Image: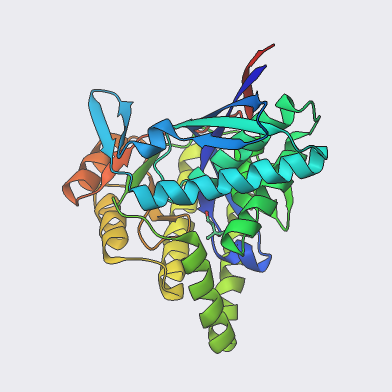
Length: 333
Ligand code: MEV
């Protein structure tokens, strides 16, 4: 038997970092996927092959341009630890001790803040649980994905595996989620070309929180309030142009607050300002920061903003929201 499952990348629109402190956040799955193929082994061993992750680079195409991402071997090894923990959790859940062979192919740049680790964990849990005949709901798979992150990186809000398993456009708070009305978001993601470690960035914010709670708590509170405001705007009846304008203002505030927490970098801020100058209504970091990606909201200006990001030294991606989360692609009996 062979099972192929896939899970999408995500972008956090509002509320990264504060979500770790129980505040709400808004995120969406995007149309870049990780594919995991799982087969049983009769020698009892667990073997993980990561073809595309091992290759230093992967290619994503949009319109007439080709994008080339550098993937370093250290990062690839980090991804494998998520796969290993995910397989162990499923074996534990199924109360089985069978050998499993897992093979990974990914379109998601590793360490770019787009949830590549969560996507690989979710796709692995989806494929291996199906292989072992374990019937898990997408929510249960998201919970196991969260457990995987906790085991590998120590702290996590669980938002990345939830968005990757469920898909679409979500409001997330303390392990619970709500679907937001689906809307096309004219966004451009800008990759700095360097990656940040979510584990280290979450730990750095925690240190600042412990050293200066009187300064950091109000920032996290503001972020939480800002997410509530964004949710009100998204569900409101106002027309799209006004929605985007108001959301753009909130994105810029959110970026400033993330900068105050210390998770921005010179390159991230350069891409953010380049996007705003080229006509984006708002631009901010997405994900843990320290490198990785920013995103801009740019109705009717996506091309111009993509060009500005390229000139500022980043790699632009015009992505779309993926309605689908975890998907079982194929089951070969
Ligand atoms: C990472 O994509 C988002 C963070 O908020 C960490 C987490 O929520 O687990 C930085």
